[in-house]
Image (cartoon, rainbow, N blue to C red; front, top):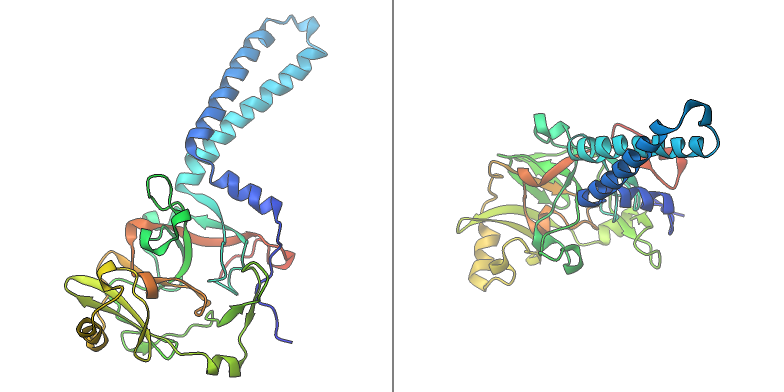
Length: 308
């Protein structure tokens, strides 16, 4: 039997609680901090007025409540207004695009400080805000702003010419060594949570995909194709259904280098990843941070594992 790459619980209440807390809007955190501050100020005045010889019973209970409110205020300010915006944040892996490196529903810690002082490197696992055309309508908020984050591996840097030939990545004409690359498929009836690796015969029977980044008419267009069939062309709407002469121009065009300030991302699970091959490049300002470690996983053997 082929081994199962991805294993996830159908109900992981702890990870869901952590994920919800990590994504709590700052406005709600501020309201919570203000309520705790008001409670603390009201109690502190009363507690200070109690004579020393009467400080027992109800006084001790109120004192504990006052101390708890005090701790929550400091924790809320420190975690949500300092740590989360500038240092670390937790994210939950929503899909199998990074199997087997990251599994569905993994709770991961993301370093948000590292890219304030350096740029992404090839091979980094990066969290970023995808373009609006790369998401589904339910992943947009009321203002049509993207409200989800993607997790992919950084493959192409500014100035790189990235091509995929027969499922292999080439950087500036040199084949890239990718020990993390996988070809896995979803196991049916598992809610997109369980994946298995393709056997070698299955992989050989699967269509092989090619990719190149093309510059045409001032646009950088991801050309993702198998044979003479385009797989996806989502990044530039006017090229989603190109006319025959445009299709021919795209297929014949030489691959273009990635422009300054942009990066090319791919999922490790190449047959189950919507990434830069389909929807294009990621601007530097959309990058949130770098994957640091797995915080929570259904299998304890991978908890807090660092150094992918």
